[in-house]
Image 1 (cartoon, rainbow, N blue to C red):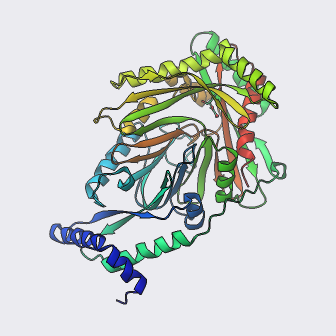
Image 2 (cartoon, rainbow, N blue to C red):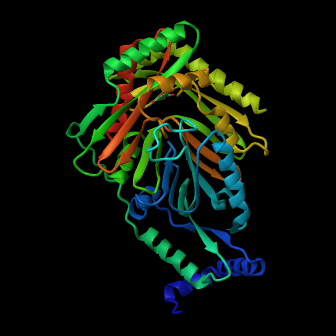
Image 3 (cartoon, rainbow, N blue to C red):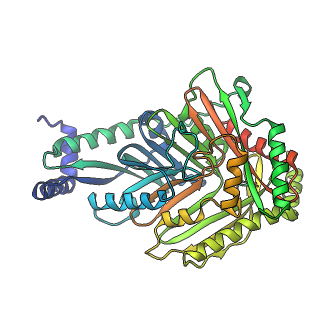
Amino acid sequence: MTVSPCTADFLICNKELYNFLLAAQQYCLENNCQRIANISLAIDPVDPLTIFANLASVNQINFYWQNPSQKEAIAAIDSIEKLEFTGEERFKESEEFINQCRKKILCFPRDNSSQSSPVFFCSFGFFDRNINQNYPFAEANIFLPRWQISYNHGKCTLIANIIINARADIHKIIQKIWVKIQEITNLKYSGEINILDSNKYIKKAVTSPSKFKLSVLSALNTINSNYLNKIVLANALDVISNNNFDLFQSLKNLRYLHPNCYIFSTSNGRGQNFIGASPERLISIRKQQLITDALAGSAPRGQTPAEDAASADRLISSQKERHEHSLVIDFITQSLSELGLSPEILKPRLRRLSNIQHLWTPIQATIPQNVHPLQIVAQLHPTPAVAGTAPDLACKEIRRYENFERGLYAAPLGWIDLLGNSDFVVGIRSALIDGERARLYAGAGIVSGSDPDKEIAEIQLKLQALLKALV
Ligand SMILES: C=C(O[C@@H]1C=C(C(=O)O)C=C[C@H]1O)C(=O)O
């Protein structure tokens, strides 16, 4: 084999990597097995979205995630291990999948730091079984990426997951990593924003406003009969463009328009993508400290600072909005207590987004070693912020009222590393992109005192925020 001078330099710098791969290969030879080498290398700072836009293909499984402060972002490109599940045990089976993979992974370096821990990316359906058999994502999707580029407070890491067996060509593997580093670091950052006039699209609500209004009125009757306290009813908007939607430009636009939201994208490897800008954290765990959001109760942003403040005041003092919000706090604290945690409710605040504001109460807890992040996800999903109360009853009613598959909408989407760190958002303010078609989703919480017209207007506001970013 001819080794290029560049590879030779890299080889010398990474003698330790070479020895690690050699030892891994030896292990596979002696034990007649295959392993996954998880190789983390510090690289010069890059923008993971730029890398994602250039290296990810819509026909691969991939994932993009970015937090609101924009201090953390991850691009995960292509998969080396993946599984899809359906049914009630999907969270448990995903945890089991991670545990099985864990046994096969050898890490370089072996420093047990969060920068070099293998990361699994997951998306779940709102329901544990889809009714629409043609819905393009399974009810649980989990994968370990082939390439991962992580940005964390100014530092960048490339993680490569590579199959090692007795026949592995170690020089070739090292060369492949080197070529990838070159490819990544030579890419030019382009933060270009390209916002088009959404009037150029053909748009159609999946449920007409009159039908939606009837559903709200009927749901209010059910609430008044005390069968339910709250139900979150959603609508979808189908959008058709003349051209295929540009996934990467739409993500850049989302990041620009919604800098204080979690930006996400996941693909099924068959051409469909689910993207969005969610303000709602389901779980965020760092070093066993959990933080989750109770987010419910909404009002428009005002056109002027005075109007905005007045709208915020009305939101804060509205009995109806506070009741809607407190149902979410109660559910989260009770659910976490059932897991043996001691949740602490932080000071309530406002979550102010580009065109809407929400009542927001973060809740925190310490996680014992034996509680897996997916157990918490399973316990919390769906919260009354996206389903209602009691959630089981509300879910049955949602199925009756909504005439489309929720799929990944309002469901958990995020990542988990092998140290127990994790981030999951609630997949709201989201859209399913399929070529030149997009389906946008938004819902609103219905409680006693809800006004159907106001709920429809709230859903419109939520849809507009996303529509603006799509190109
Ligand atoms: C259901 C959605 O949003 C949820 C419902 C809210 C409400 O009804 O006030 C507020 C925030 C979210 O928890 C959505 O955006 O689709």
